[in-house]
Image 1 (cartoon, rainbow, N blue to C red):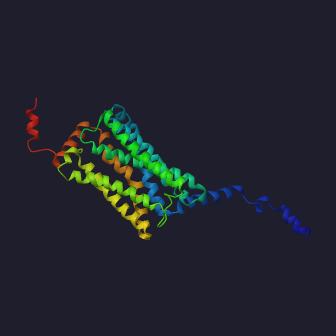
Image 2: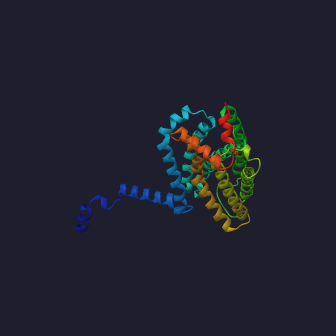
Image 3: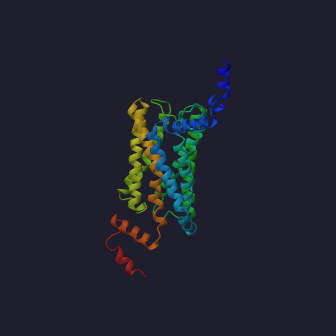
Length: 308
C-alpha cells in the first residue's frame, strides 16, 4: 500500500486534473461546429454567409476608389443609395452569420430584432428603387431624393410597425419558420404587394407607357428578376400556409437567393456604372443601351445634329 501511495504522489498533477487549455480548445471547437452546422445545416449557412461576406469585402476593396466619386457626384440618390447599401450589407452579413440564433431559445429576442432590422433595411432599398423607377427619366436632385425616401420611409415604417405588433404583441414568430404557422398570412400579403408593384413596372416597360420609365434595359432586367423572385416566394408562402412541406423548402431557397444575391444585383444594376473610370464610356454605354432598346426614333441623330 505504501508503494502505491508513493507512486501516486510521484505522478505529475496534469495526469489527475483536466488541462484548462484543452478544455477551452474543445469548447471553442464545439461552438464553431454548432455555429456552422446547427439549425439549418452546413450548406444553408455557407450559401448565405459566403456571398454576403464576399460582397462586403468587394465593397471595402472599392471604397477608396469610389469615395471621391461619391463626394464629387451630382446625384443625391446615388450617394444616399451607396450609403444605405453599406449599412444594409453589414446588417445582412450579421443576419446570415447568426442563423443559429433562430433555433436558440435564449436568443429569440435578439434574433427577432436583428431579423426585423435586416429585412426592413433591405425592403427600404427595394421600395426606394421602385419609387425611383416610377418617377421616370429625370429622377435626380434633392427633390427626387426627398420624394423617394419619403415614400420608402412611410412604407417601411408601416411594415415594421405591423411586424412588431405580430412579434411583440401577439407573440407570432415571423422569423422562425414552421409549416402552417400563423406568420404565413402576413408573408402572403407582403409578397403579394411586392409582386403587384414589380408586375406594374414590368408591364409598363412592355407598353406604350415605357417612355415614362428610365430608359435602361438593365433596369428592366432588374424588375424581371425581382418579379420572378417574388412570384416564386408568394407561391411558396401560399403552400407553406396550407401545411405543404415543399412550400417551406421552396421558401428557404428563395430566402437564400434573396439575402445572398439581392444586394450584389442592386449594386450591379444601379451603382456599378456610376463608378466607372471613364465618364465618356459611361455615356456611350447608356446611349447604346437606350438605342438598342428602341427608345430613340430613326431621326434622333439628325435632330440632334441640327439643334443649335
